[in-house]
Image 1: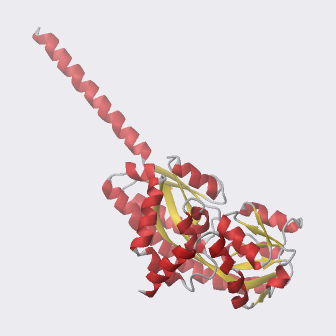
Image 2: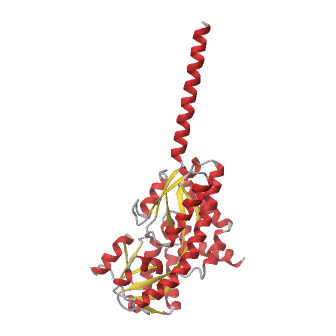
Image 3: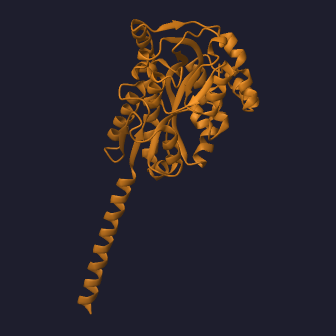
Length: 328
């Protein structure tokens, strides 16, 4: 009897150790994040997520691993946002326009002529108003780790010269397909055409589109200067993007790791923004050497034309709330 009890006790201990080992393996596997972006590996965005990966893996001693993918190798941004919301262990860098398709209030962070500087957007993201939006996204399965990936002003890069709204008539401009962007380009006088960024270069080559709505980094690093001749400095958006991940992946992390990924996301965005500002100035000079002509425009004309976007998308009230934050 004693021998049988001893055997049962030993067997129970072995089974317990096996179960603990299995749990540890599962937990370790759950901490892997696949993070994909649209831009190439020379872009400030990618340098930012490299900083995120290094910081997170170092501070968690490799318990949290981050796999990086550039140039839409993993999937494009809309697909990754959807996958994240469904609970897959993925993340991406998404602009406010794309996220605004899920929560309309977020459109305001990428609305025409809403902000004059990166600092103004930073003031909004420190407000209680913004924090409420972050929690709403969490309820939809998306965790916004940071919203400080600043990549510069958005302009119009075209095959023909544009200095006024009249010059945009009959022009087809590539957009991300987000509603706020399409409405903005339409109100400025052009026809928006939503398509993946990777299709924009051949689209320009083949004459399917006449231009793109983009910032200097994206234009230069995708060699768009080979197929466009002009850049109209409309500065219609200050482009700031979010580092987002699946809420399920985030919730599965121990609390100390959650704090680490938030802190490292903020640091990575700051690093990306600093590099982006340097590159934007450098790339403008280089594109000028390639023969691209930069044109100043009457921004007040475009500002007045895009006022209708706020009414069309029922954003007048949220704009007033944001202006209150900026005036505090």
